Length: 201
Length: 201
View 1 (cartoon, rainbow over the protein chains, first blue to last red):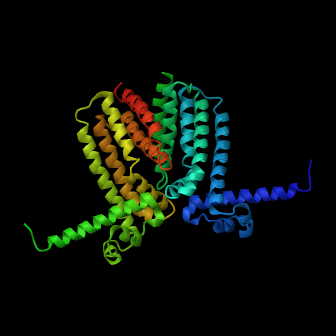
View 2 (tube, rainbow over the protein chains, first blue to last red):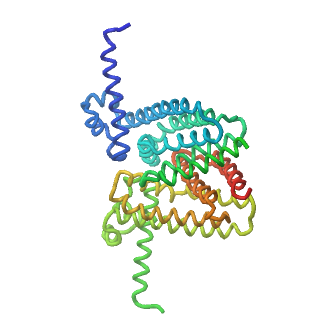
């Protein structure tokens, strides 16, 4: 059912997505100071007026970009979960931990880090992103529980899955200034082995 | 042996320390943008000229503040180590993990996070702080090994101590926008129990 309005809506949606992707690129590459509506619009090849139509304030742009990052990450996690179907035992645990940890070294994490760190000293922005963070944390936890095949009502399993997400965040932060991949790989292997023993005996 | 030069040197040293402490306060409370030589000098009650005598550039000030944070943290860690003397077994492991993790929720961590995150998009600053970070990482690792009483030449122990430091960093980041202390306490307890079993059987 094509209506005359759809092409215009499609264009508007594509413009919005270009702006959000440019925001993530600007944050990850050039940091917080570069992620203004004007700089992002230029990078996205969108007029400043069109950008301001979508995102009247910088906070609107940043908040929408954070939501977009979470959607992209959720899509990646769905693909990772599908690729786990053939694995089992400690190999599966290691694949789950590795997938999680690597997601925290992506440009998405580096962009989100810029937002979190700025929001630490900006109560108005913080108030807008805390509910998004809480929702993302719940979804990430549920996905990790499912991927690891554990019973989340068991407090040991619940807290070790939480710890694994916190470890992933810490390893992400350790990768911001230097390439930490060699050290990280060894830590993921050891964590996965220790976690597997603790979860499955 | 008091010489006529000492009082002036003492005053200079005290001024330097006031500037570094004001830098940490500014970073932790108001974020990167507020941590300029001018703003820090005003907060420290030091003239801008005197501040620029100690720290000609913002990068000099920030780098010196990061070194000062590491010194303060090392002093705290020495005190924590002394307070462990009476503990043993899993209680000691939990005290070590808890002390480490709590250190990553302090204003020092929040100030350092502002520097790391800004440096991610500032190669000149990054180049200056990466060697400091590497040294701090080595010292923190060695201290944790000693406090836990493990053999660092055992790869399992080595990587689990590293993972504990990464977990602590991740828990620190989770505390930046909201008070995460209730959740964190449960994770520290569980990880200490799992770590103790993995290290000591």
